[in-house]
Each structure stands twice: as C-alpha cells, then as structure tokens.
Image (tube, rainbow, N blue to C red; front, side, top):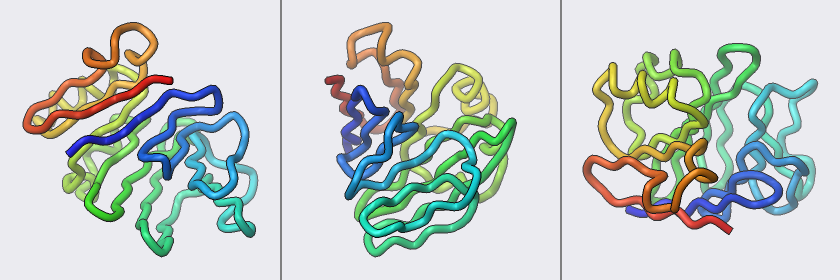
Length: 151
C-alpha cells in the first residue's frame, strides 16, 4: 500500500482527496484543519472543511476527529482500501480507537517517540522531515513501503 502525499503551497495533500492544514479552503476536497474552528463548517455546498471533533460519514470516507492539547485536531480516516491517522497529539495514541490504522502521519518527533513507546507498528510518515531530506528518507516503515512525493 502506498499513500500519495504531496506538500503543496496550500498544505499537505493526501491521496488527492484530503488537504491537511490548508492555508486556504479548497473546493471539491476534504479540508482537514489542524485546529478547532470557531464554528463547525461541515459540508457548505462544495466546500468541505472539517474543523470540529466529531464523526463524519461522507459518502466515500469515514472520519473520526479527536481534540487534544491546545485545540489540536487528530484524524482517523477510513476510505476505500486505506486507513490512516493524522496525529498531532501523542496522547491520542493511547485511545483504543486508533489501533486499527495502517499508516501514521504526524508533524513531529513527539508522536514518533510515543509510537515507539507503545510499540505501534505499520507505516510512519513524519511531516517535519519532508523539507529536510529526500522523500525516500522522510518515512519509516515496518511492513509496507510508503511513497511520498513532494511538489
């Protein structure tokens, strides 16, 4: 399984379906905000912005959102053949709900250390390393290869 991740000027594009931490809301894509919004902005016409902790059942995707640490949002996403988590708060990894994810996407080493501590396997993508090194080195994997593309 390869997860396609592209760093764009507007955020991190995952599988051309999800945009994490966008600087501007994109149309016809699921915008995953990094922090809680002032009001829930769920499905406003062709704008889909998820910025509130809840469960979202969108025709082709199921997204669970947890809040932790200074309003940081954490996402568990299942769609088609993929299950992945975007984890900003290491403490979320202790919740039972996160155990079924195949890929962990995270912004810094604190989450990686918690994954090691809990002995959680599968694929890891450290977003903080995308700028620092070639894309081949930005991932750590245990069982499957991950493909990361930077634009």
